[in-house]
Length: 222
Image (cartoon, rainbow, N blue to C red; front, side, top):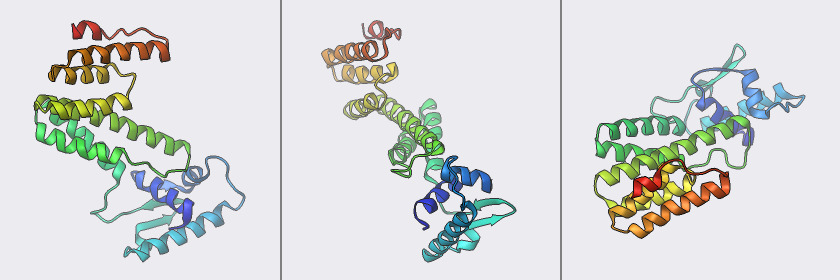
C-alpha cells in the first residue's frame, strides 16, 4: 500500500470532505520538512497505492483520483471511515440519552467507545494526526459519559460503576467523572467509597493542577 507514506495518504484523504490540494497533501506527508524530490516521491507512492487498492479488489484508478493539482479518495458507498463513524455515533448517543432512549444511547455510545480506543497511524507523528488523536480521545470521554449515565438510568449499577471507573482513568481531572464514580458507589450503598472518590479527586487536582475544587462535589455528596 505504498509503505508509511501510502498509509498517511490513505488516512489524510479519507478524513477529508473532498479533494485536497497536492500542496496540502505534501504538508500532511512531511510536516514542513519537504524533500527535494517531492513530486517524484508523491507520484511513485500514489502509483503503488493504486496498485495496492487494485490488489484487494478495488479499482485503484477510480478510488484514488489525482488531477488539476488536487487528490481525492472516492471510496465505495458501503465503505466506512472510522473517525467519522465514531463522531456520528457519539452525537446520536448524546441525543438519544437526552431523549431517554436508553437502548439507542447504549448502542451508539458503545460503537463510539469501541472505535475511539483505536490508535490512528501508530508510531507516526504529524500535527494533523495528533489533532485527530485528540478528537478520538474526546469521543472516548464523551462515550463513557453517555454509557455511565444510561446504565445508571437503567439501574444497572455494577456496569455503571465499571464504566465510571474507566471514565475516571480517562478524565482524572473531570469533576463530572468523579461525580459519576461517586454516584455509582452510592447506588451500590458503598458510601465510604463514594467519599473516598471525592476526596481523592480533590487531592489530585490540588496536587497536580495547583487549584482548589470549586465543583461543589462535597456538597453534592452530603
